[in-house]
Image 1 (cartoon, helix red, strand yellow):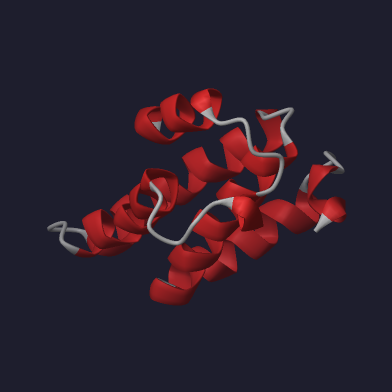
Image 2: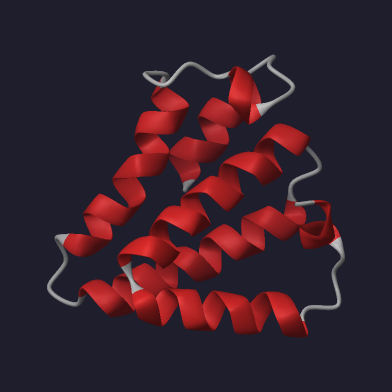
Length: 102
């Protein structure tokens, strides 16, 4: 997550869709689900990652940051059904309106 934040802070793009498919930001985002899947406890690590992603999603002031975190969360949800259920619950019960922009 620290690496994603570092890369994000160095970007000048306004939209995640403007980032090329092979850019290190996208590669780093893809690695999150891969790392969780290689863990001894993949579901638990994926939940920890997704909690961090949602936290960063609500904290980032940048549109590109929100788009990137949604992309990472989407990847985790597709790879780990337990994450999908929890993430939906978090977003539905959140009082923060940042997710309404997607």
